[in-house]
Length: 357
Image (cartoon, rainbow, N blue to C red):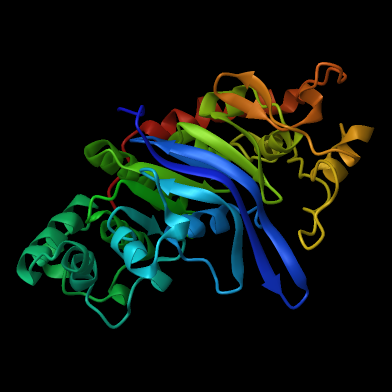
């Protein structure tokens, strides 16, 4: 897989939401890039800014949102400066998204064959007959049995797992360069989840699509991602390769996420939730936004926001604990133990072929 070509670059993105209560500083100076054929996972608690960031890439921000800084460059062109027509030409063709709930993504009054075929007819001017033939191929590709008969069914005639496969078919029919998957398996049971993840990896290998995978499930990250960005309070606080984030995490928030991850061995111990709640972004705190929940916080955390410190060529973390003069603190041993259990008992098993639905 060639990951040397950069297809998307987000630089210093800042987004506010204007509400009756005041201005919410939802995204606060976020930067990352995406290379061809790779999967970047963005992880964090609800409200950390994951979905807002990707909606910006799609040009789907709410009316009360304002981009107050930064750029989103797709092959060097700033999406934020594009008009509606240019955005419509890109959205669904070059950049596509799989949403969390397939029922809100599918039209209940339209047969699924037409829904899959429509992006081809709109974006590439393909005739209805050819588009429907391609829709049938996509149905087979995503594993819908008896596709010839089912192409004329409506969304309510499919199970949740099948509907999600249909949404994936719609997103991929134009062979997009970038696929955004916003928690696409959250509502599915574990067996169907494994099938969907395997399907996405298989299709990625076939068409070299780059994937931005939004999730709070670190187990999914382990099996899907090449690189990981950890978000907290509208900022990226740590990023690196998947192995760097899991085996050598540096930010206390990342430690907390890993420590709260259930494993098949969880019954022998107790999960350790991260104490407290994220800060109110109507009035973002001075200093490190995680300081109030960080058991290792120092005085400087309440006074100055930490810069990114370099851990390796591909691994950076924004925590004062990495300052040369900071006291030496090591991650809780429980994190290493949990991850070893997860790695041995689940991650390896998840690479096996899933049983067809």
